[in-house]
Image 1 (cartoon, rainbow over the protein chains, first blue to last red):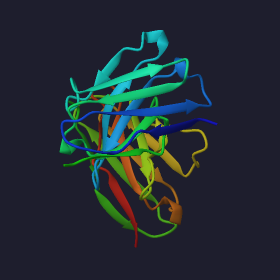
Image 2 (cartoon, rainbow over the protein chains, first blue to last red):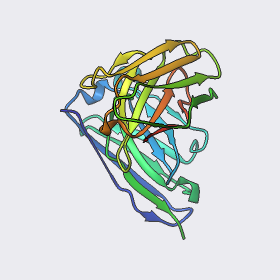
Image 3 (cartoon, helix red, strand yellow):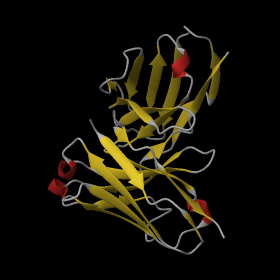
Image 4 (cartoon, one colour):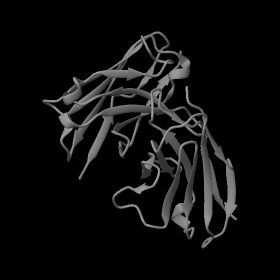
Amino acid sequence: EVQLVESGGALVQPGRSLRLSCTASGFSFGASAMSWFRQAPGKGLEWVAFIRSTAYSGTTEYAASVKGRFTISRDNSRSIVYLQMNSLKDEDTAVYYCTREIDYWGQGTLVTVSS
Amino acid sequence: DIQMTQSPLSLSASVGDRVTITCRASQDISNFLGWFQQRPGKAPKSLIYDASSLQSGVPSKFSGSGSGTEFTLTISSLQPEDFATYYCQQYYTFPWTFGQGTEVEIK
C-alpha cells in the first residue's frame, strides 16, 4: 500500500525558514517523481515543486511564486522527500501536500506564516 | 502559463443524477490532464489521469473524456459520498496548473 506521510508543519514568523518532510512507503521511491502542492485556507490547489526520479538525475522544477526561496530534495536511501522553505511570507500559509507523481497524495501538513 | 478554466464553478444535484464538469485549457495539452476529488477537510484524491484513464480503485461511475483543449468529467449516478469539490489539472508543461474547482452540492 502506498503511503505518504508529511511532517514539519508549524507556525513560523515571516522571513524565517522551515523544512517539510514526506516519508514514503509501499512503492519504488527512487524510480518515482515526487511533488509538493499546497492549498491556502479556503482556496484552490497550487503546484509548488517537482523532483524527477533517479533515472532523470533528480532534476527539479518550481512554481514562480517560490523559485529562489524553496528547495525540493530527496533522500532515496530513506525514501524521504523534503521541501526547504526559506524567506517565508504570509502568502505561503497553506496545507502542504506531498505526492507521488500525481496519483497518490499524503494527508498534508499545515504551515502558518504569521507574526 | 497554461490557464485551466472549469465550468460550472458550483452545481446542485440530487442523488442518482448524472453530472458533467467541463475543463478548458488555454492551449493544446494533448491528453495530459487529471481530475481530482477533494472532500471537505481531506486531501485530494486522483480519479482520472491522461484525460480518460481511471485510477486504480476508482469506481467506474467516474469517466473522463477529451483531448487538446476541452475535457469533461462525468459522474454517472451521483451518490452521497460524491458531494465534494472537483479539480482538473494539466501536466503537459511546467508550471502545472489547476482549474478553479467545481463544488458539487446536494440539492
